[in-house]
Length: 554
Image (tube, rainbow, N blue to C red; front, side, top):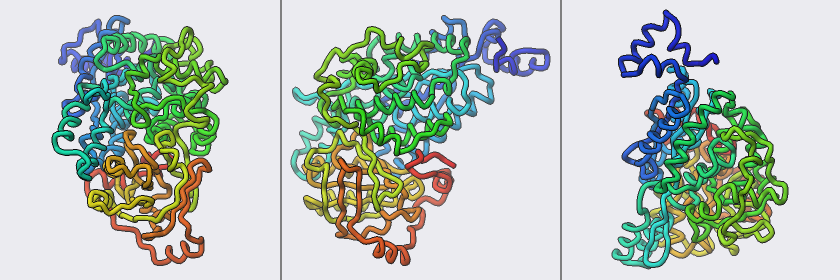
């Protein structure tokens, strides 16, 4: 078989190339085999990545067992939890593009024949997949796995509970000792934070879309099965290479539709909408918000995992994981089981023997939490190109809401007023100039939403932003408003105390101001000066596309 790596390993003219491999200790025997890049985001700053050295070593062992030569290369990764609530969060979403670029760079510069992607947390999973889809060589995802839930007293908890506890402390609802109890016990060890936040959403969806082996989304980081899965992924990549099964063979329109069905059933993070749009862009598949809403209106929500409920990813794993979710969805014909997957077999073949082991965790499709999906897209004069809400994490009483706008031009301005007790029941908090361009970087608003929840206002106050939300956010948190304020979107024209009408069941969001009045306001509108004018974030600000198309650099 002719391999890409032959460009650096075969022929007399490649003697200088080979000499550099020999300088690193590679042997002739190793260079005679396919060269497989193992792209690892291991670091000592991300709890979801602190153990990825062990995952990568297991992947390498699998590659060697199957006759390949593994070559470890690095990728960066931002911990969204540590970056939260300050300027560091501006780098999070934008880093996705850097990660995709680095995968393309390392794979093409060194002529790798195939890739095993070893991510775990928020932007790293989609960033690596975007890079693999772009270069389209055989690739498989082998994630690090979710963190186990923490425990405070008899209650299982996760990071979202801690953020809310911080809000409760600011409101003097708990004391320092109680806050310390949450602080010291919410995150018990390595892995991606234990709820259905962005990291676990994307790890589950990488499996659902077919780019990872069964179990990738749910097997806990500390279980031995995770190491076994990594070894199997290393072995499997050699089969994918032999069969020449590439990312775009897997990332078909039907596969995206399957993944969206899984997303709705699981109640994934709103960030997954951004990332699936971005991956589709790189895979050259048409995907838009209209299709997402179409599927949302068809597919029921079967899971209430944190922050929507008290269960965690470890519980989903015990229930049978993504395969069990699919076993429910196929009952009503929502899933195309003929699609090819990273196993080298079809999804239907992968699902043989799969069943729902815990109906209390994955509701049977005959008895869902709701008849529509966990994510909803809203449109209206505030968001002519759409916005996103995690419907499964919204209290019933907030599914429709009308209230006065409380307008802020940054997260910092909003959080100061929230912590100061300046937000009243019924208010609609509007945070703008936090979009891809205006932020720049589309910061997550976990601190404001958690503060509101901690102050017991999440069932009385809505929050709207052209920024993003963490998967840990709950309540009527409506993000990705497009067009964003920095591009002259109508969110920039909202004034203090304008009435805002939210109707999630009807997929609508509007400011109760006439078109004529908005036109008048636009005549005097001047966008804010960019917050960041230097460094690569300034470049991202200039080149970032709209949230409704994935906020990819264009």
